[in-house]
Amino acid sequence: MKIEILGTGCPKCEALAKNVEAAARELGVDAEIVKVTDIVEIANRGVMMTPALSVDGDVKLVGKVATVAELESLLS
View 1 (cartoon, rainbow, N blue to C red):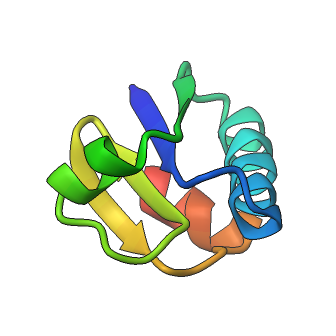
View 2: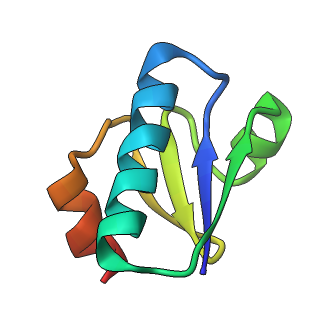
């Protein structure tokens, strides 16, 4: 599974990345977690608010820092 955090590196983006890592670890999911910070690439994916979360190329979350529990539900 490839999980991408789309954002410029702001505190909310970092919080989402931390929560994603925790959720993946708790679920035991084998995931590649990547941070995408290029604003042009983010916009090309149709994302206009950050942070955003993409799972296997599909944008699942935009403009929100999801909790670990919400991410576990999304990733399972």
